Image 1: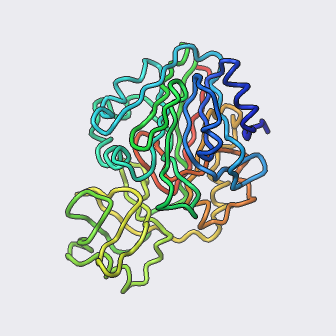
Image 2: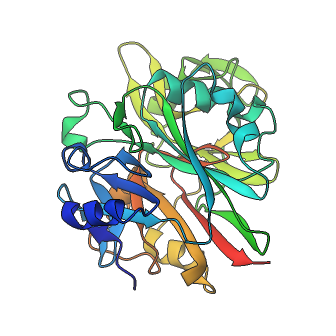
Image 3: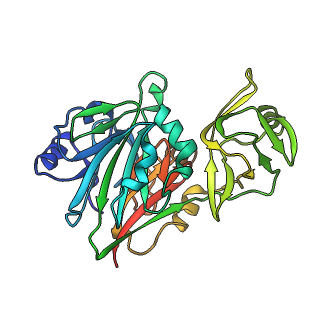
Length: 329
């Protein structure tokens, strides 16, 4: 298996060699790096060569292949991110990093499906995070290595164009599917929910979850145009009678609680790609999968990547693994 975790000194050498890099690591170690053609996001959790790992001293490195000649970095905010798809080059893709819980994250999560040319070209990436022990104390960040700027609210995107003989393909591994229970619809889009229609009957969502002893480690699942998409629970605020989510629910979409998963690691590996693993350019997995399935020191099919606060495959996802392959046409 190829090396993916590097020391700061090793990454510094790669930057000074002019390599084009996408980096994931703790804020303190990313701040040690010189300017160059790279972007980075904060996270200390990884699927590394030896398995799941918490690491605040090393950096996960994704190097752009040498055949990608036309690449450029753009920083967006919540007001101009709607042009991200139109900025992706022909036969190209965009790699996006957004800090968790900032305004740009919230705006992208709610509005991306309405962006011009949404999903016409691959947009993949992840929501940056922090050590879970530092939640509420330290803000997630993204880095524009070209300028040296550190950003708490915004998105940094590495746009890249593939040569004519190459093509990219983005895939989602989601081990969750809709259960057979009640159907939920919501009166408005958002990350915070009070009211819900349960099989068409209006009631308080927090009350429903508590009264029915719903396992909130399992996400809500909806069918978005033939794909199962998860919405994960953050917390039930009993005092406010409110449910907070890690991704937004949308009006006029039917959700159900996911079917229970007995053996996540085995089920996950059975859904992993078996061929052309070496052609995988990038992959990331969700922090909730890491926690709930106890992935520390466990391998997932030999595929590596940062453990994120949200995955981006065209739009925000939860409790999935996303990967992109680059292949010959």
